[in-house]
Image (cartoon, rainbow, N blue to C red):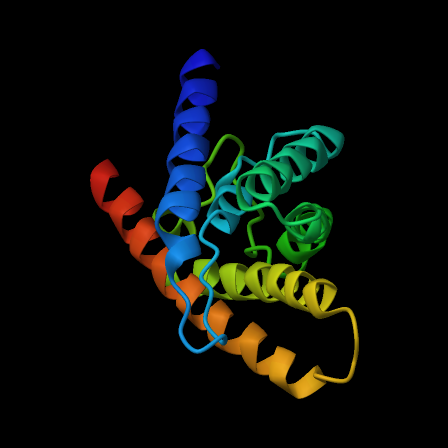
Length: 170
């Protein structure tokens, strides 16, 4: 239990530092902003009670908001993604269900499953994030492009991180 707590605490710190120090400085013509901290929400264990998971999602977004000076948009996007996660997991559940105590990872459930899972959660997160940031429908299609391009780049970095995580266990 303590090892898992320390492990996920370390992952949280690394992802937040990567986001704040590296990925917040990446921006291509206003359309691409990777937000890799979403990976923390993706990989948290299934056994976490829903209310604890929502608090963790809230704190994850709040931490990014504090470091970036944004006014709660990361908090709301992370909280909504955390709220939707159980429904997404139920929607894409394997035939045999989820193994008790198994980590959510590409190594345990396969590339296709993890990619579908990550795409859905990242799209939910980025849609809320960018539309709350703009908060008007005047730039609907421009914001939609931002959601798509940023999601693609975020997913590329998340998949690289997941390959690294899966490779370490072998």
